[in-house]
Length: 273
Length: 273
Image 1 (cartoon, one colour):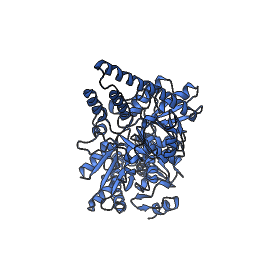
Image 2: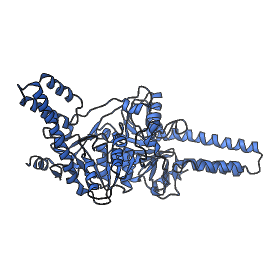
Image 3: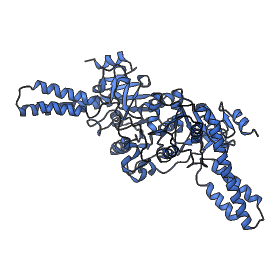
C-alpha cells in the first residue's frame, strides 16, 4: 500500500498542466484507501479493476463527446484542428477528433486542416495518421499557415482538445491554441473545445491559476535530432497556453455542449446528474 | 547580349513573389540596352558596374531604413520579428534588422523575440546568428508562441520585412506574417514593415494581385531530412502571405516612414525627389 502511494505521488510529478491525470490518480488513491487491510492480491485486483473502469468510462465519454459535437459538422464542413486528440491521446475515439470521427460515421463528407503543432509535431506525426487510417481527407499545414487558410475562407470552424479547464471556462491546451482562438475570433470563425468533464478543475477560478509546463529548449533548437539554431540560443518553450473563455463558442463534453461558456453554465452541465 | 537577356529571363523565373529581384533585373536589362553595339568586355564591365551600383545603393538604403526606424525602439524596447531580414538577406545591414541594429548602435538596450519561421527556420538558423554576432539579447520561440508572448505583455512592437508591397500598402512577406499582424492588432501592439522602395510595386493596386509561391510539401513533411509525417500526406505550403495595409502601423523605407499606410501617402513618399 505504501509502495502504491509512492507510485501515485511519483506519477503526479510527471506533468503539471493536464488535470485528468490527477483526477485518475485521485480515483486510484480512493480505491486504494477503500482496500485498506486487504491482502496484496486483492489490492492488486481492486486497482486493476478501477483502472479498467476508468478506461471504460473514458471510452464511453469520448463517444458521447462525438455524438454531442457532431451536429456542429454539417456535410462538407471544413475543420481546423491542432495537436493530437484522437485514439493516440485518449481511450479509442478521442475528444476533438471524436467529433470529426462521429460526423464521418454519420456519412458526412469533411475536410480537416491539421496544424503540424511545433515543437513536437503531434499534428504532423499523429493526427495525420489517425485521419489517414479512417480515410478522412486532410491537409497538413505549418502552425503559421492557419491564419492564411482562415483568410482564404477555407475553414468553417476550429476544434481543439483541452488539458485543463478552469471554473470560468478558461482553457489550457497545447501551445498554439490561444493564437488559433484569437485568429478564429478575428475571422468570425467559431472556436470549439472538446473535453471530458474530468478535464474541468472547478477548484481553479480562472486560467491564470493553471500551472504551465515549460519544456527544454532543445525541442526547438534540435528538432528531431537536427541542430537548427546556433549553440547557446536562449529559448522560451511553454508546452501549453491558456485561451480565455470569451474566445470559446462552446465546450463539448460527454454531458452535452456548454454554451455560452461561463461559470454558471459550466456548473449547470457538470453538476447535472 | 542575347545570352545576357536569356540569363535575365531565366533568373526572373526563379521566384515569383519578391519584386526586388525583377526591379534589379530590369535595371540590368536597361543597362544592357544602353550598351548596345559595345564590345563584349565593355558590356561585361558595364554590367558589373551596374551590379556594384545596385549593391552600394542597397547598402545605403538599409542604413537609411535603420535611421528612420530606430526612433520606434526606445531604450528597453522588446521587439518581435519573423524570418530573416539582416545581412544574410540584403546588403550588409538589412531591413527590419537594420532598425534593431541601428537602435543598438545608438546605445539602446533591446530584447528580440525571434520566430523560428517554419518551415525553413530562417529565424532559428539565421536571425539568431546575426543577433548573436552583434551581442543583442534574444529569445527564440516557435511561431505558435508569438500569441502567448503578446498575451503576457512581453512584446512592445513587431517589425518584419516585405517581399512585395502593393500600391495600397498591402504587403506580401514570409508565411506567418499575416497571422502575426492580426495577433498584434488584437493585442494592441503596433506592427511595422521595413523595406526599401524597390519592394513597392505600384503597378499592383492591392495585395490579392501579388502571386504567392507555393513550395514542395517535403519542406513540411521531411524538415531537414527527418520524416515527420506519414507517406502520402497532403500538404499546403505557401511560402508567403499577404497582410492588408490596415494592420500595418507604418512602412519604414529609406525615404522615411509612411504613416498612415494608404495609397496617397505611399505615393507622396515614394515619388518625392
